[in-house]
Structures are given as structure tokens and as C-alpha cells.
Length: 267
Image 1: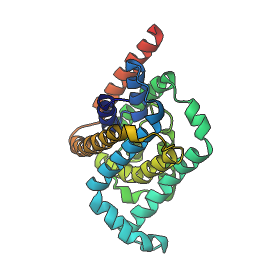
Image 2: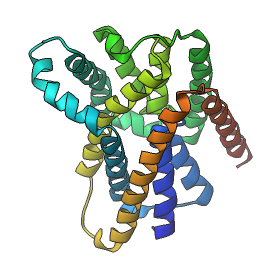
Image 3: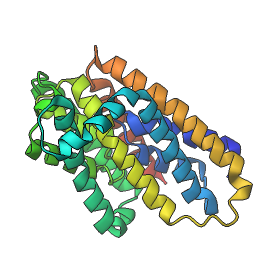
Image 4: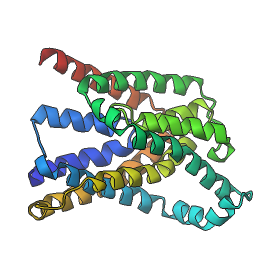
């Protein structure tokens, strides 16, 4: 694996982890198009990129993270309060993806196929277009019920399938439940923090550190690139959706799905 590959994949990971367009589908597409095989460094590189995107979202939402951490005792004690309620909702919404990732890891791995990514990209785009036209976009995230948080958690768990964007699924379902775009996106990013940590830990668990010294520069490049680009992606998305719909991302998903589908048929 070269430094150039590390830069490109780091940029792709940083952008697509937070934009509602599916990181897994784009990584599959890039690797297949260019025939890139990370070899023994693939797992280590995935861990480095997960750490990079984690740093990005933690830095951007540092005030929210501190506020939620301070309110954690109150949340555990069942007390009321905006921060305590938000913390409980985030925990509840994290449970489905944790259970799915733990018990169905082998099944999910078998789903990592370009054809499945094509279908998921297209279906996700159609649901996203529907959410823009059906959702009332009037509720704050704190108004969600526990049952709704479970539903959002299931949407996040579906993102383990390639082509189903984690942020896209969460934002779309949250909007269908009446949340504003901004509230839906912020909730999606905060719920994503434990998910990113879990994915990184699970991947690192299978990592064989032997022989990784020669890939140190590539890993550092992947980490740095994904963190910087990830931060810019979060900032840009939140600013964009404050004044625009998600239609652009939905159309982009349809274009990518069509291009990937054509490539699969022609190959």
C-alpha cells in the first residue's frame, strides 16, 4: 500500500463517513476501479481511518460531548433535563448496531459485494427523497421517545450493509419522524461516536501488529487525511443542510448506483 493510496482512501473515508452517501460503497468502488489491494495493511489502515474520523467528530462536537459526559450521572439516575434525555437517547440508539455487529458479523461480511451496494444506494436515495417531502421538519432531537430512538438505532444498524450510509439512514429516518434537518444531522453524528469507537475497537481486535512498522507513514497519512477531511465534511454538511434539502445527495447516490451498476454489467 502506497502513500498515494493512503491519501486517496483517507479522503474518501473522511468525506463519506459523514456525508449521507455511504463510505463502504465508495471504498468498495475505489478499490475495485483501481484494483487496489491493501494486503496485510488493510485492517491497520481501517483502524487508522476510524480513529481519524473519530477525532474529527469529537473535535467538532467537543462541547456537546463534554455536556453529555457531565450529564451522564443524571441520565443514569433517571433524572430529567435536556442533556440527560439526549444521553439516554444516544445510548438506546446505539444498542441495535452493537448487537447486530456482534452477532451477525459473518453475515455482514458476506454482504460486502458491489451489487448489494448498488441496490442499497438506490433505495436509500428514494427514501431520502421521500423524507424531504413527507417529514414535518419541526421537532428537536430531545423530543424523541425511547421507541423512536430504537427505530433510529435500527436504521444505523442497517448501515452495516454496504451502500446504506450510517449518517444518511439516521438523518432520513429522523426526518421522517419530524425532526429538522439540523437536529437530525447533529443527533446522527453524536450517535455515530460510539458506533465509530465500536467499529474501530472490533477491527483493531483482529489486527496483527507484526510487520506493520513498514506501513507507519501510510497509516499516519490515512489518519491525518481522514481526520482533517472528516472535520471539513461535518462542518460543510451542517452548513449546507441549514439552507438546502438532501435532494443533491439523493441524486448523487442514484448516479453512483447507476454508474456502479453499469460497470458491474459491463465487467
